[in-house]
Structure formats: C-alpha cells, structure tokens
Length: 341
Ligand SMILES: Nc1ncnc2c1ncn2[C@@H]1O[C@H](COP(=O)(O)OP(=O)(O)OP(=O)(O)O)[C@@H](O)[C@H]1O
Ligand SMILES: [Mg+2]
Image (tube, rainbow, N blue to C red; front, side):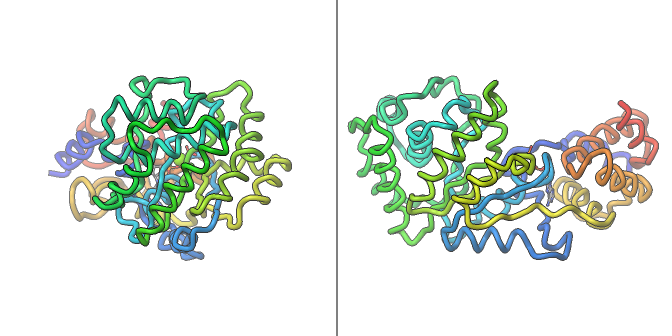
C-alpha cells in the first residue's frame, strides 16, 4: 500500500524541483506561517495593492518565484500583475529601455485577440531591437493572473489597434506603455510590472555585470516613472556590489527578503505540500522517514545553503531509488545516497 503511494508520487513528479510557474503558487506554503516572522506574503501583497516599487531578494533556489507566484498569481484580486517574461529573452534587451518597453507592451497585448500577423508587425516596430522572432522564443509570455476582462480587452485593443505602427523611440514606446497601464488602472485594477528571475536574464551574457548595471541604472529608473507598481526579484549576490545596490536603492522603496526556514517542522510542511497536492491528505511519515527529513533540514542549512530547490531535487532522486528498490518509505540512507549521486 505504502509502496504504491511512492510509485504514484514518483509518476506525478511530485517533488519536481523546478515546477511550472502556475504550480509554484499551488505548492507554496506561506513563509509567514513557516517562520513566524513578518510575513513576506502580506508585505508583497501590500506593496502590490499600493503600487509601490519593491525588490524581492533571496539566495538561489530559496523561494523568490514561489512567493511572487503565490501572491501575484491567478487569485490576485484587484491587482493586474504583468509578468514580463525576461528569462527567455536575449540578455542585451535587459539594458535597453526601448527593448524592455517593447516586452511590456507585448506582454499586455499578448493577452488579447490580436491576429498573429498584425501583432507581430506592431510589436516588432515597438521593440526594434528584438533579436528573436516570436516563433523561436523559448518561453511563453504569460500574465500573472486572468485579470483582463472582455471590456478591458476591447479598450486595450483600441489603444493599440492591429494596424497601428508603434513608435520607434524609447520615449514614445514608454508613452504607449503608460497608455496601456492607465487603461488597466481605469478598470479599478492596480497594474504591477513583475520582473522575476532577472539574474537568469543577465547570466546569459558575457558582459554579465555591464548588463545588470544597465538594467539597474538605465531601465529601472524609467520604469519607476510608470503609473504602475514594480516588483523585481534578484539573487542576494547582486547586492554585494556597492554600485548596483546603490542604484537599486535610488529606484526601489521596499526590500523583501526571503526568510530562511529555521526548523525541521517548517521543512516538513514544504515537503508535505507536494504530497497533499498529488496524493491527498496524509502524514509525511507515510512517505519520508522523520530521520530523513531531519537530514534534509541539516543539508538545507549547510551544503544546500538555503536552497529549497536542492532539498526537493534530493528528495526526488531518493524517491526514485525507493521506488526502484521497493522501499516502503524514503529513508535517510536514500537521502545520503542521493546527495553523493
Ligand atoms: N514557501 C515555499 N513553500 C513551498 N515550496 C517552496 C517555497 N519556497 C520555495 N519552494 C520550492 O523551492 C523550489 C525553488 O523555489 P523558487 O524557484 O521560487 O526559488 P528562486 O528563489 O526563485 O530561485 P532562483 O534564484 O533560481 O530564481 C521550488 O521547487 C519551489 O516550489
Ligand atoms: Mg526564481
């Protein structure tokens, strides 16, 4: 019986360390509940409601995207999150105001029913620096929530009619962005521009630091002037650079840090959320031994340097081995084996 549960969880990829964005929000256990400290969920929600500018900071794999997707995902009432899909984009767009403005326009308009041919024409003229044709893109554009109702769609359509040639200068493109954001605002929604996983964007570039610098010094100051909230996520290491963190402080009002989990129980809740999502309500111990969870928490605090992603990856490997070896649960030996694998 227990072994069947393990097989089902394995078949469902229940401990997938890099789930789809939508699933991140489903699995998310609020850090406020896990750590008992000032809830980052409440803070991010408040910042979004008020249209403020914030940076979400954390170690790699610690939960930045999970937090953003949970708070600004499909259920974000009254907020229109505009999740600008940065990680699939050419990195030199990151430092280019016109390119980023084009991406924002594209993200908003892509939610609409533009005929494909007209949309491509309009967007290419908005973002004349685009290097990759839409068909070759690696990531789909998506909005953070299903916020655009039929009326709003019609208004946006009118603003950027399919036949309109969009402006070629950065300033004029920003004006189109502003018009679109103002339409969204008029619909009693607070638009929030979300730039998640920015470092993945920069990292695709040899000129890594220069691109990051250009994004912080040239692009963010322009974005702060838009009639919208702004959420940027980044790995903590960027703040070690004094120039970058200075530039960031000039643009951003609030900083939200991803808190570290401080107990085995908190980690157990994260692991259990995966089991409940795929196999229904059951105790964690039916799947993972308590000693194994304790070992995972040790690793989280030491070798994994706060990366929940590494905890999940290790659990996934150990579960696969438990299935192959017909173990009834994931044991500490399997965890150790998975780490050295
Ligand atoms: N609070 C949480 N509750 C449940 N699962 C979480 C939580 N935080 C993170 N996770 C899980 O940990 C993994 C890593 O999280 P996430 O992708 O959000 O990290 P990240 O900080 O955005 O990483 P990166 O620096 O690579 O962008 C994901 O599988 C996610 O589901
Ligand atoms: Mg992320």
